[in-house]
Length: 396
Image (cartoon, rainbow, N blue to C red; front, side, top):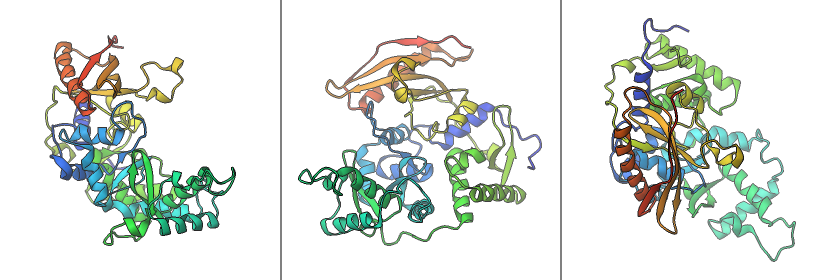
């Protein structure tokens, strides 16, 4: 792998670049309002959906972190206008409609029967669900549950739900809206705008798309990050080939650092002007695009993060729903938060400060922290907040 001699950016530069490309290095990086929401989505490539509601849901939280004026209604309006659609990225996600055709490889793979997820769904099942939605209009899974039917009948909720999901994954159905967090399914032709390109990309086009998306959203990338949860030897080989070609034509450089494996970036990577670190505290969603690749976060920020809500209570180290704390271009700790809707009170159950060096001023951090908690409480529609316990861990 040819690499550019002497091209070894510092870990501090890489952190600043990563946060800048993620839209986290300055306030209102993408602007304000609904247009900023679309701009952020198109830049990031997706925002992950999650059903947990300990604090405001992940997709809204991720967008608000980058757009201070963001309101959930902005995303909801974009969905209504068909500028955003719901599908699978590395998990359930909202994606820009501009990128619809790059969801087709997964859709067509399911339709060809290359996935074992839906092996029990029959053609008859699919036909019945499609005919029901075609005649009755958009439906939720619960609309297929008939209490009058005997247990085990076809219209029992579970088989219908699985059929709906298969039809969704293979692209015959789309999510037209949500009622709360319940999906509303409709026929693709009634949701997808007419002008959208529905031609499946070639392997080369798809690999180019993945490379470009990673470079745009993160500034630099690795093969492991590009292929995260993307299986298949042909795709991996094509990505390696295209990266090599881009290095040879001078578009990209490859380099390694002590912390990171082989990294790819555009040739002007070190020449970009990066904002200085802000003495601002931000609480990131556990599913934020900037931290979802756990290996990268550990290598780049020396921050070992795991969401512990899926861990048995006695085995949790930090808490049920800890949010990573970003401060001055570093991940410095985590906060176990809970928004109590009934009392409109945001509680930080435990707050851990675990990353500090001689430049870290705890007093300045605490001032920024209080402001951040106040803003986060407002975002969660809470009128008050409290920090129950603050713990400064010794530096290892």
